[in-house]
Length: 251
Image 1 (cartoon, rainbow, N blue to C red):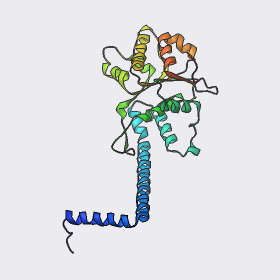
Image 2: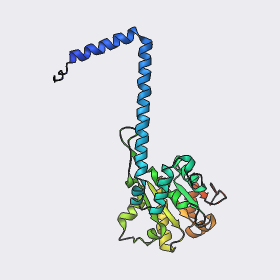
Image 3: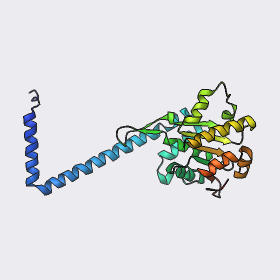
Image 4: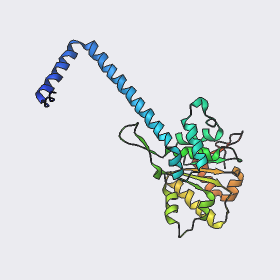
């Protein structure tokens, strides 16, 4: 077995010069070769991106639940994302369409309302797919769960002003926040003050917030007040999750 030849800069430079001379003598072949290289690189990048996206989706349930999302909704969202478009069951529901509109836009708020079974929670959890970071290439996509938080409104309403500062600070600052089932918690003056603080702070900092609620827009406004309603009206999407689409419905 012979050992490999040591690297020689002179030899390397000679090969470059030979390649350039060949390209000058054969411009059409050189152009075709370069085009073939570009096509192959595009195919390789597309394959790498597809593999990275599959891996990203494969980790979805664990990542979403680590952000506080319920297991059942996380599993459903993962299954929908992994399925072929023709096999998806809920992708074209009112709630999922509203979630995609919200993700694709710049609104601070998405208010999903309607009765039980409208898919509000699953659509809200699907928004947390945006908790991702791209590394050196556009196909190097990984989860960044520090960017997202899911919390039930009843749990948020029980947070103490003095004992739960870390969690409350997280709710104020996290990039993507889902507040689920607003309206089923015990509503009092203390909680109205707190929810106003939370949503007003997020509005001011242009952070993305999804709210699911069983109340109608009118009942929502009556329960939580004009200030919150005006913030959502100014910079939000309001979507009904039943047969009728209340998107952009004024509060």
